[in-house]
Image (cartoon, rainbow, N blue to C red):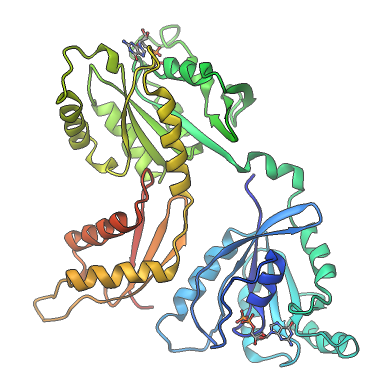
Length: 440
Ligand code: GDP
Ligand code: GDP
């Protein structure tokens, strides 16, 4: 299980970012004084006792508004909450209970998640308890008086918080493991590749149970990295026994893709890309997985000269045009040629898959892209406008573009914007999702 997430929710200026800074033990996050300033949903690593978790400041929540971007902030907050194990709802003990707090409480109650009410700015030991008592009225349970800046009461709050998080031993183990699905038609060389990985000198191998009864995964350790090769039992299974040589366990492959971070799409250099390969590759894209195209049996290609790789690349690229984000690598499982390079590419793809880019960088790219090439104008003279973009999630990286009207942006322009993101940010090996969203 990955690290649990705790979302900090509250109206602007109650002290959310100051509190996150205390938890994360760093003072480098920006604190805005202006209410309602949109900020990045940044995840920060925090520790309490033997628990490790991520905290995310959801930004200042405001309900009564006519400002364009506030619905988006709420959407982001909702997204953050949907991924979280608990919410800390922060209010301001010096301001007392406000209508905005009640609106947030009403909204939070509809989310099915444990909520702790933190009454911030209660540094005075005498006043603290009475300041906090007022917030019983929210009907969410015991209000905890704290001071994010001075630290009063935060220990008690965190003691309760960690009771809502999964036990630490269920968490840390799998976190840094990269899950790899080796996918391809029968005979392309999947089990040979698997053996080549396992044969690598530095790797340590151990079989572990997968999700279904007969799906055995294998863990490989290389340097300080851990990889889990998904459903190695499925890869090894000899197809001729029950099904005949053409049996192509597509559902098994789909399940492996579903459980993976990165897919190794294995192609036979002698046979080239087939319909079945395309089907599998499509699934990897649809599921938003990182991907590397591995052209195997390169040793068996005869009469190679300096153009051969180039010609092959062109051909595979055109047949798998929808996998344009995936790096292409030519290997031989038989001789071991370039096999070690596959895991290097996996490392890159896995990093990019979880990567987060700040809102300011995204908006710089949009501004630049629009300056080079303005959005299309309709026959009525109405032009598309991109107001603002922000990354709302990762795995794969997903960017929401907030525009006046999504219909004004044709496919050509959308592809152009996506290209600009890729050119500026790379995202090698991972899909990139753009969501075009109109007002309201
Ligand atoms: P956010 O908008 O909820 O993230 O709030 P900030 O963290 O930016 O804090 C808003 C203001 O409240 C800043 O001026 C902080 O210095 C102040 N503040 C934050 N925490 C405390 C606290 O524990 N006690 C007091 N007295 N002020 C605080
Ligand atoms: P799987 O069905 O995808 O697991 O494929 P296998 O690993 O069982 O390989 C099928 C056949 O291709 C076997 O005869 C392998 O020896 C052969 N093969 C696998 N990789 C290579 C390679 O890199 N070069 C050559 N020449 N043959 C290979």
